[in-house]
Every structure is written in C-alpha cells, then in structure tokens.
Length: 122
Length: 122
DNA sequence: AACCACAGGGATAAATTTATCCGTATTGAA
DNA sequence: TTCAATACGGATAAATTTATCCCTGTGGTT
Image (cartoon, rainbow over all chains, first blue to last red; front, side, top):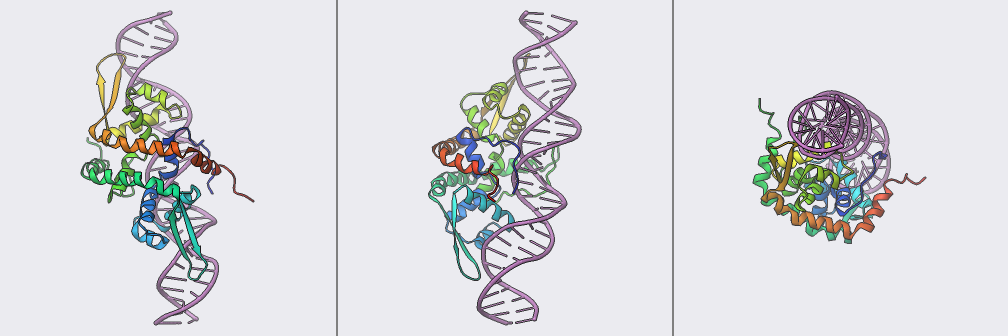
C-alpha cells in the first residue's frame, strides 16, 4: 500500500466528504452500482475511459470506507456483485443532485473547461 | 501554467462536477465565500491547514470556471473581495448537503479514515 | 529607517493519484 | 491443448496536484 506522509484533514463534514468521494471515478461507481450495475466487468463497460485497475482500486477504497460492499460467489469463473451499504445509499440523493447540476449546466461547464486546453494568449 | 497531457473527460454531469469542484479546498472556499467571508486573508484564516499559495491557485480556478468572481479595489494596501456568481450560488445547496452528510456521519467516517493510517495487520 | 498589512505569484520539490504493462488462477468450450 | 471469460493485484512510470520557500510592491505606523 501507499504510506501517507501528510496528515489527513478530518475536521469538518466537507473534509470527510472529500476523503471518501473525491476520487476520479468514485461518484461514477456509486452511481452505476446504485443503478443496479453490480458486477466489476459491467462497471468497466459503463466507464470505458477508466482502466480496470483504477476501478479496482477505487472500489476497494469505497469498500474500506463502507459505502459499498460486495458478495463474492464461490464459483468458477468468479462472480462478484457490489451493492451500496446503507451509508452508500444515503449519499445517493446528493450525488444525483450533483450529476443533475452538471447536466443542467453542461453547456457552461464544457465551455470553461475547454478554455483550459487553449494555450495562454500571447 | 501546467500543460495537460491526458484528455479531460466531460461526457456526463458527474465528469463536469469533478472538473470544477474536486480540488482539495474548493468546496471549503465556496462554502466560506457563501458565508460572507470574502477577503483572501480571511479565507486563509478560515482554512489554516491550507497554505496561502494553494488557496490562490484554487480561487483562480474557481474564478476561471466562473463559480466565483472578485472585486479588486484600487487602493493601497490592496483589497479584494470574492463573491459567488449565480452559477456558484446555484451549487451551494448541494455543497451544504454534502457538508451536512459528512457531519451527520462524522463518527463513522472518522473511524474508517483513521484505519488508513494503521499499518496492515501482520 | 524599519516594519506591518495587504494580495499575488515564480520556481522547484514532494506527495499523491492515475496510467501502463503484465501476470495469477479456474473452468468450460472450441 | 489453446483460448475465452471472470476477477484480482504487483511493479513501475507518468501525470497531476499540493507543499515549500521566497520575492514583489505600496502606503501607513512606530
């Protein structure tokens, strides 16, 4: 594992939120699992931009943080199903609102984000 | 500036959200500005764990993304006041919910976060 | 004259996160 | 026997973000 060197901030609610949901694909994973897409392979197809490796890592963190849990079926080939814990379920209304806010303002947001790619004016 | 090498994902609302609010102190800054703490020096006192440098960088990004704007008073010593744009205001209800969720579940969250510091069992 | 408050940013190092590559294991099917 | 499907994870490189250190400039105060 990676041994952290800088202290983790956990003073306020916003600190805690950052620690558990600010990963590149965490809110996406929570969303798709909530939608019923439970198996790792399906999740990867739902998020093709992410490599399988990263999804595994972030799923593991969500699991460690107890926002998701999984059932490992004892069979061959392996079968695993993720599901949201009660804690995970409880945050979904907010994540959905975030997604809606992003969709609702997508025109604006894409515009400002695209500017980042443009080289600074001479 | 930093020239990005990997493509930015901006497919869905959740991608866009990540791009504009997933910085170490961005939601904190939005929150405090929303609370009326508008001057850079005050913001830094409100978030003592962050260095002034990082706050400047993240404020600049929030400004580029048009979630905040600022008034620069033409006087000496300098005086600057940040405020939320309409877009910035519109996301505050959700950020407040995030903070409340974190506060509400702080006991659980602190527990799982602290485990990360513990070395893996032998 | 020396210092403080104020806001800002360059240069670089360090930390952290993510990407890339590749290997493990099992069963059934071609 | 070779390959596909399934899930997982080590090792390392690259990218990105954050931390550290230090400097600029002005006007008022001591």
